[in-house]
Amino acid sequence: MAKQPHLIIFNPDQWRSDVMGHMGNPAAVTPHLDRMAQTDGVSFRNAFCQNTVCTPSRCSFMSGWYPHVRGHRTMYHMMQPDEPVLLRTLKNAGYYVWWGGKNDLVPAENGYDDYCDVKYKPPVQPRRETNLHAHDVWRGAPEGDNYFSFYAGRLQKAEDEENYYDGDWANVLGAIELIRNAPDDRPLCIYLPLLYPHPPYGVEEPYFSMIDRAKLPPRIPAPADWDGKPSLLRGIWEKQKLQGWTEERWDELRATYYGMCARVDRQFGMVMDALRDAGMYDDTAVFFFSDHGDFTGDYGLVEKTQNTFEDCLSRVPFIVKPPKDVPVLPRVSDAMVELIDFPATVEALLDIKPGHSHFGRSLLPVIAGETDEHRDAVFCEGGRLHGEEQCMERESTSVGSASGLYWPRIQWQLQEGPEHTKAVMCRTKEYKYVRRFYEQDELYDLTLDPGETINRIGDPELAGVLAQLKDRLLTFYQETCDTVPLKANKRM
Image 1 (cartoon, rainbow, N blue to C red):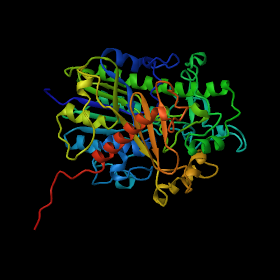
Image 2 (image 1 turned 180 degrees about the vertical axis):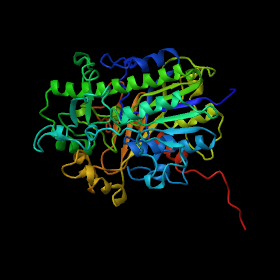
Image 3 (image 1 turned 90 degrees about the vertical axis):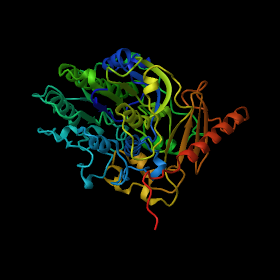
């Protein structure tokens, strides 16, 4: 490659893998992502995050480490100065790194200078009302059944606004402006960690009405009997108080989430159009992926958890478009991949030798169409041990108090019961095994039960499968339990 390609890291928050048109979802409106998968990129059907909440997932996909390697299992244990972060690697390799969007990766008190040239601050700040966490008048009364639903519905633009100008729109427009005025002496790396479609579920027109409610796929219902399921799920289900919701109300919530995804797809398309207009598209590698998914009504729940690994939470969109001179076979690939494969792919693309050991594997052979075999299993982990008070996230009191949006989940994290138990998922294409430290393990036959509704952990018919998955999990931990620094110390 004559010169290093530009990089776009487009990173929406909490997007489920199944909400894309090219994945066969008739209700999803994602024409720009669909186009990329059809013409010049690869979309991975079986891509999985390594933790189902924001910060641990981001620490993992920016380092190539699983959460257990250095204990990145909470929202308040971010990447430390001595730990590897891909953005810093790229900056040190000569990239002009522009970061527009949320953090959830490095301690804010340390600053951002090591990781980027610009931590973007929009010249025009969004109205306070656009922050649905802070401005939550949509919730209703505390005793009502919308108080913990995260459902805000249709959002109203200001009279003088072309878009519902919030943080996401501000950062996307900032990225487009940078593309139009890109430095000519350094390759660009644009990192766009957006907030949408993270709940609260709210979106403006035309996206709110863009989704055909009649085309929504069936929702996985709440179990009639929660036996065999993690206790945290039942605990949240009881506290969110959504048991009386009709399917029509669930459809409105789900359609709003789909509309949020449609808006992000539109923003993605605008960035791609800006690259084309600037003559940069062919010279740019594009990575589109989410940090984790969202319940969006499945199992009668909204939002997410920190130690359960249902596919709606752990399976994520992952689309890669390489530069034009790198081989690609556009398609939806069935390869099993993990988000830690993202930094390994960037390093292989740029011929960068990482300065640390990690566990990602380059996706370039899969992207080229040489194979659709990449991993035999994928892994996701979270939770804590009893006594790990630093993992209780007491810092979350601003959002985790009894009146906070996240209280139905946070209250269980503050207790020493089994609900917040440490857990790990080992998933193949056919089966999912979850080892849970303080409560019953889980085993699902994904061919017969893709909704993970019947826990077959004690089924003698699957005893052989269980033994194989336990052995695979042991191998995983032995392979990844630590990393030895590449630089050796001198001995006296």
